[in-house]
Length: 544
Image (cartoon, rainbow, N blue to C red; front, side, top):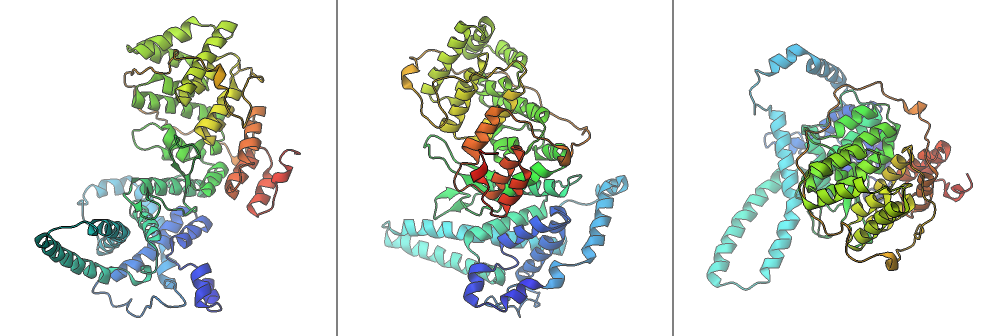
């Protein structure tokens, strides 16, 4: 056990600053990333054993933890609890039972809500962690209300209630695991989220180790976003800044809302996976299509290697947006980048609202390869920009033949600040056989917009309208032979390459794994490996 040995040669101050305890969320995530058997094995063996050991503190009849001291210079869990070799055999037997039809029939006889004592302790531990993450919020509300003036009778009553609550909290503190009392609130919240995945793990079946890491990161981010955690200091929901599991993407544009994405290491793992189709299937929620918020949170365009699969995902996203917003203009972009104008026209044709009829008439009566058609598409694009309807504006730029791809990417990067969407558009537009990219327009990468060219109202800028609900989510139960990463040879267009070099690699403060992903797309695997080792390879971006 090397970590305790290292702790014994440093001071307590150094330990607090540099060495994490075994149960610290960062330590757990580091172990899962480095487990040779994958996250599935790591969750069952290491994380499961660690949480079972922590749950002993919530058992009043268990005296085995009384010898442990929170101020110990060696805050490590018992070796036999965390690294139980017997679990390997148990895991293999469990996997065989799950795949057995007999076990499935037998499971029907098991009564629901019938939990073992260990499961009950784990549930209690989760309750303690959840309660601890809400204490600061309650305290903050209490301090706010204390500044108000109330009558004496009201104050006496509230003091009595407060006394009862403090007694209850004192009892809960006695049950709270001693090793966790030195953790911060955000660290407890992350530990709670990991504990939830331990009780209800993602589907790791038939996924290789890199894909397991990605699906774990996706499940963890979803659990965090679904929780009611509020960061008191930053006054934001799920506002932790622990980059090992998710990143809060910020924007300098006040009109663009923040969004969370999975860890960059999980994106790199997904790109290296040999089971991408199975991973893509596991990413979908049951009976739901992928929407853009979900795909963006996974940085899906950056790791899905197959352009055909990305094309299918783009159309799936378009249908999801169409169903949610009932606005054909918001969904049009995701069909145009795939060249599937038939379904786009069909959606507009079946709509009985004004926007649908007008849009259908527009795309069927104009030849967008002509000067008149291109001018009409461009005019509507700028009109929508003026209304700050950026997604439909990009769609109208792409209606023109050849498409105004440079203008479209400029809008996405400078107005929407969405690199994942820009990468999706650049990749798929390069595959359109009839796409002849326009290299000259008034916009320059990194510059602003000429408002003088933006016309008055008109166009589709202020249209509403809705559409009938589409069918069920895309389903593909049969997985074809997976393409291996070792056989992948990235082929990207000049616009995609320029996007990576201008808006990707040049971004300051970018995580190393993101840089590695972008270098892999540029066909520079050696530089990608060097970037992970803190070697500066960005100076040679334009010379290679």
